[in-house]
Length: 224
Image (cartoon, rainbow, N blue to C red; front, top):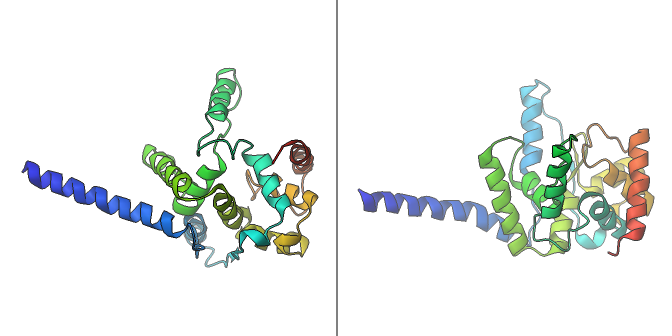
């Protein structure tokens, strides 16, 4: 009985590793056809009785993305990106301290964690999902370069309703390819990333414009 259980456990671990490690290794070089979050959006539409809505998504290589786009998302989302190994413990502690002082519990997810969530997982609140997020983040940091992580992030991030990736966003909002994004345009896109459904790049609110200016200042001051 004991040997049987050990054999089952071993096979379960092996299957888990194959289902998680292999895709991460392959995506080190291959562009994803879709992401878990894009599929989740389709499922949401069907559950709401809205039918099928096409997703705007077009993968482009890192050399086809403006340097300003890279700077904007790092300045906005994860300024310690090049110095951590997937988890920003300083940001996590700052978020906890702010909450204990009576403030809101701010998100402290790194770009690597956001890639793990968007690419492999669907939104849910459970210890299992959080554990999988940590696991995929470790794998991503282990097998991918920082440049690949940024390339993936900018290609699969949601920038609006059924709008994914910096190329599709650049063409919808500014009628230019991502390679021609200027600093102000890149900062505006980055300003919407916390919640691109509510925060609009087209006809931006005062809050989005204020956040855009903050990102531009960070881009000038941060030594990328």
